[in-house]
Image (cartoon, rainbow, N blue to C red; front, side):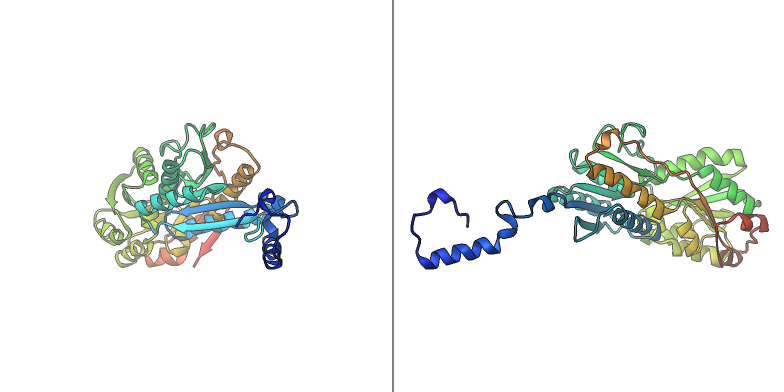
Length: 338
């Protein structure tokens, strides 16, 4: 009920006057000059959409949240945080994006390419900061990495494919045919497979591809490579990463080396990777969010490409897959899992 001073009668019954007074007291936080409106104006709302839960993307989310707190944004105080996972379903990612647009947050963070594409398709007005997106230009999220030009910018995790192939050859020089498992529905994975195809020839390798459209199909894809390849490489594909254990089991059962595009997958059982720190990618994302919160436009904020790579080795899994990792490689690793 809204009271307008010019509609009140000069004299008011005592009960009505008491009720009015009580209502004004109870609504004091939102009425009048002492309402605390300046505090409300400082509240930032961040909507975070993630295509699927797996360790690398979870690390991005956690790094984002931790760095935001370091930058002065605390959930429940001056930050409202809404996180949603699409559970690997692009249609669900689109629904989440539509919901977020309706909520009108201060900014949207989209973790991984499918979620970023869904968010970008849903709004051209709300700032979007993507994270862990392989190729934002090829995914049509930005006009260019240097000058995005719209309401979208973010942090890429473009895999150093050539260095990964070199690592595979150093650890297992006998590999001649490399298998790769990916989801053709993920633009990031399609880009990576093209890069792999372009790089294998120079390294004396041939490529055998196997695809999975969802996590349930990953085991079948991995089994289809047995007897056809000398090693399996799992790129930063969200569908395959969510079911990585199925690929690893094929490696264990068939003495077939499994390599990965991220170090969290090495912790889970892949033999090796040379990768970015995904929590660090989340922290870089938070810095872009902070700039947007402070008034900068994503249009003029260049895409960030991390340049620090860390070598991780899982010597225990290597033994289970019949591989002896050279001591020189082990000595170079920042992290060795046993």
